[in-house]
Length: 342
Ligand code: NAD
Ligand code: ZN
Image (tube, rainbow, N blue to C red; front, side):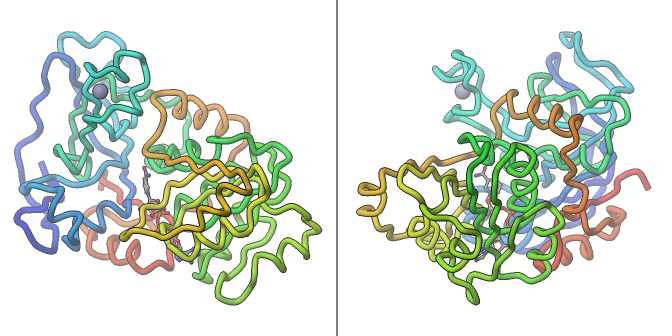
């Protein structure tokens, strides 16, 4: 089969012929139809310090996908050839305290699809049945391809109640953009998006932002005044990993405010802990998705009118993977999809 492979330590990915993955008795083999490009894939492609310490080549990259089941192991009874599925990209150990208690998202031994095991930028991908998610008939296939990052957005946006609350989304990459739509769908009063990139600010407005501001040009205190807010933001969704974004957000939070932090900083960040203490803030780290509550929530919100399609801005056949990665890297894009059916 053809697959996009990190063949050796160093920058670049190669489209190569490799063996189809073998499946064990508990596994499901999927013919991949569409995939989404994630920041993780860009890091592995460019071979930054994180990738160099995390990834062992050769590796088939990619973890956001939708595809059709073609084969199942002898122990698998709930999945059948022909069904349309996506996969949870975190393969958990199944044996630790948290896994045994049903809190698999807290597993400390998670292996990432396309990071620690061969991934989905390929014609076929194999996953344990416990990582496979059925789609409903008629689901938009491009939306289905990005359930993994939509899950990040949903898990973060619903980490704290947002009904009637004033929400700040800090960073409007694909995940911040989807979180904007989710916070709106879940009943927030105002959803203010802070994002330096103009293209992404326009997308944020399409995703339902009350206001999308450039943090270099506008002060969030002014924005609060313009909206008639008096106490600061109740909920912050930190989706940038940027130190100044995090500090500005803390400075603009209401007493008792809550922040869900998904963005991954590349360095240590100094914070005003006095503000955290005296404003009695809650800061919560978010990693991945909750298995499978988040998947259920995504499914039912899409069925009840959540529309995230504007986040998908670029589509390429998989053979044009270089162009696809370039579009994803440019920043002037939302989600970039590769088609593996052509
Ligand atoms: P992205 O890099 O496309 O988006 C980050 C956005 O933040 C960009 O649009 C950037 O312009 C913006 N930004 C930069 N400086 C800013 C500032 N000062 N104020 C406001 N915005 C600023 O990434 P993404 O794919 O949307 O993912 C969002 C973040 O979540 C990234 O940091 C990513 O690494 C991280 N992530 C975490 C998990 C997890 O499980 N915790 C999973 C996926 C991604
Ligand atoms: Zn575990």
